[in-house]
Image (cartoon, rainbow, N blue to C red; front, side, top):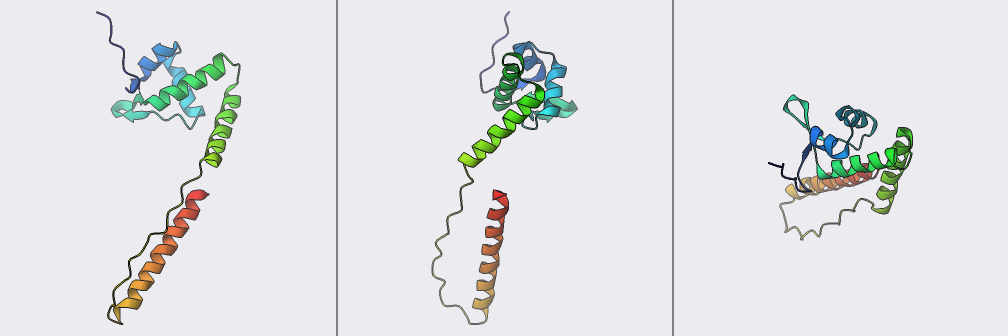
Length: 134
């Protein structure tokens, strides 16, 4: 009885991916050490599960190495430059300034404390935006 083909969105084990591409499993494990973008899920007993995006990346790496003649170092540089280019083209969305409803009149003792908390939260969010852009 023939094995059923998995859907494109299904996770693949290292054996399944290895067989699909015709490359040894140890090569896939080696690529995981050389390409930080390639991080399959690892479950109990270090069993690897490749997500669809991992499978696409492995296929791209395999094509660059075997068909286009790149070296491992060349593929590393290519993937790193593409990642930088994509980050430059698609910057992190900025947080929209929330529209605050007017705070009703508060007792004069409580209002300064609440305004101080609001200002500290705004500073923290602004600092977080700056850190995320770095």
